[in-house]
Figure 1: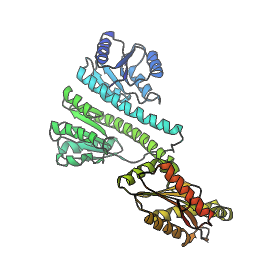
Figure 2: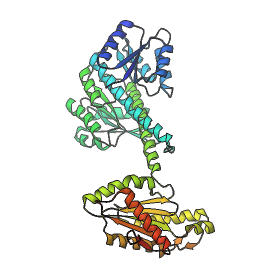
Figure 3: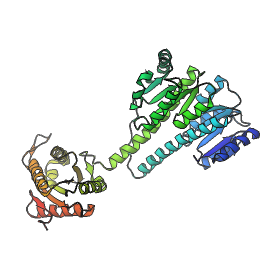
Length: 455
């Protein structure tokens, strides 16, 4: 996987060896040995990963890590601390500073490359989500997303029930989460998407079973975005590399401390919540772009994009396709006499009535103002005629009850086009329905007209 890696270290001998290993794996490597050079490079270049020695000549590497992680522009760059000190206290201090991992010199090549691949893969995923979010914002498609205050969930796959219960107690005491301990017999239900994070011990159901759980989670759509923290045998870099390549986000060794478990889990849950918020922002923005905010119906933009698929479906079933345009008669007088609030009430009620009388496969949209569009795939002439007349009566025969205490009766004009799906195009179908609607309006309103007959 290509990527640009910044190595921040004073010791040239060790640095040159790491540069060689990474370059042979086709990574683009840049080097810095001071705090100032580091800040310049992360400001000028697209850095995908930082390997940082805490013992710099001109700065405390831990504080530099904390600064990078607390700055919006660099917070999402993974940072791996590389040091000769493998003591737990130093590792905890680095993780508390925001580091994503902690590797001890001399670094095992297999473990180094597996961790680099893993962290860059996660960085690329976040970058893609941020790009989609930024693009959507440029087009004005994003509405503010409310902060997610829901309690996150953790699934614990421990080597035995007692160990799992102990982990659950420590995790729930330290983090605002709800944790559940799973037995190996329930492993089949793990990929249902119920958890935000999974803590998987290598002896859960046997070493091969534990790694299979990691692979299964990444293969299932609902669980794919969950954070996975894998606990590997002490010193087993091969299992660590396999777990990371299968999709684990982070790992611990058997001798981990409870504090390190909590810190790593907190970091992964925070990253998942951030990624989820980006996904929700893009999803909600796209939904807003194709939805009418008053009625909740899809809008013209959606219809124009979606109708091609409905034509293809009708063509596959060798059936005609129909389109209707509906326009509420003399609706301007409603707004003028009763106000736009009353007019909005009528439009919302019209939308509900139309929805209640259409099939699930039919497409109903608000085209704008008092005009609605309907596309009916696999629909014959006779069915389209019956449906159009039924919708006209649904509007005319039942009064609209307004909150101002008034009952209002209105009518609608409808234009219908039914085309052979083998010859239909989006433009031709919609233009035909529009022409039929004009025929209804010109003939006195409150009626149904058909394209062809209208022509």
